[in-house]
Image (cartoon, rainbow, N blue to C red; front, side, top):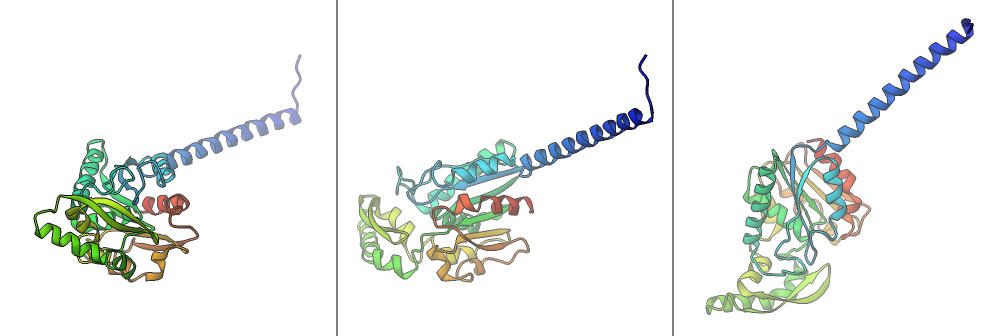
Length: 274
């Protein structure tokens, strides 16, 4: 015969209460984990790499972070990739982003955001200047300033040569032109027409002009404290965009190439708050 007393009954009830508490805590933790995994459900994000990059270098950590939150992500290879550089115009690149956005919509995305790094950030701003149905724009370590003195000193003679080639009917002839990436000079093969579209100081890739033409859309700007773009100040590009209560300007402890990875948590948190 098994005897039960007040002490045994008390500990039995205590074990039952503790068991229910543990089960409830586990359910809450699972719910929190599920919320994290699906915090960006419905988002379709076009993730745009930088100059000389690829869809799987420099932005892959951010890519995975966005997917873990439930976002659909397209990372197309752009005309400035290491393999393609430069095989299409800036305006052609806008059409390629359109195609990526359409693939996301067909996959079920209801909110389209463009997120770009370096020259990809330039393209994201340029895209937002031309398409007014975006849910968000994120510019990470924005780069490529054809209107700024550093690039103009490098490309001024080449731009004049490209214009002469186009006027002479040689706009689609591929020749060598100068380029610059984070202060490092190098040469690229491109047609005069494509080169001018990327480097014309009054052309389609000028970020201050494109920022001013953006619609009123949530705009996140993230740059590392050691990134040269920070020296231009907040108002040079970000401040020209139409004001939106959700827009945010961040300077982080990161380098130019590491910004997408190091800021991935802040990017996800900002997108989830929209």
